[in-house]
Image (cartoon, rainbow, N blue to C red):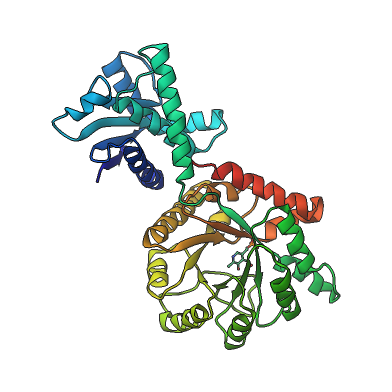
Length: 398
Ligand code: PXP
């Protein structure tokens, strides 16, 4: 591996950041044409970086990043190195957190900036040498960060809106308003990139009329959520939505409760996937963030997985939330590495969406309840735009 990352501190919590940084560091090596070289990155805490700062630079207190190049004296000296090792970058996660908050940026963004800064020192740039050198380094830094930003695995997380909840209100009265078809049009006008509807066997919210009208009117992408039941499969094959998401469906549940047990029903699901694929409809499987479900989804030919975010959203305390987030992040990374396309959703709201939108392995978020709830008070257009702003702010990942 050209990039060796070790975390000296809270390794579990920061495993994902390490994976993302590895990907970005490989990008930097390529961009600077030193891909035959390697480097090592050490993620430490303030105490450890303070010791290094004092020991090697005679400076007291913590700093954000330290670089220890193998070669000194610019690009050319790299070529004369006996080993293809650029050196070490040491980043304090504590300071990175603090700076991210102070600068109102995401933790990933700050880490990526610090790594890029440290990397430039390794390949001979030094802003402390002179004003001219500082300008040269900052220009290159900006250039590289722009390149990394563009090479994000997804340009920007997309928002798909589930309008079932509008139909639920309509069905409560048994009349013809509010209309989920009109709601879908407003969501699209406000910037949503997809519309999601769940046609349940008991037709408790979306009706057949709704999905056929939506097929005609949706301009972005229509994602039909469905259980793998015979009747619904037939409707999906006739309707030909832009994609289907297979979910477990129980009659008594208020909403989809858990992910699909893909590993336990591979044969049945593979058959449904094959039918959809033949009709040119990509299939996503709604799964809990578990390695065995990801592996099974990949084996039976799903195009996408949608990772269930419910346990993360409903976590009773911050510690559990952190753990659940890590499971989602790791599962998304694993699925992405396998070549699956990755969506996520369920229970996301205006507080929980940000960190999920920052995961660059996730293409699309499927959100319904929180947006429709907010719309009751401030209107659907604003509710969609507020959610988009959160996604955009957190998705600006270098
Ligand atoms: N994804 C799936 C598979 C779902 O079943 C639902 C709920 O209908 C959602 C996403 C959206 O969840 P919420 O309405 O809680 O945002």
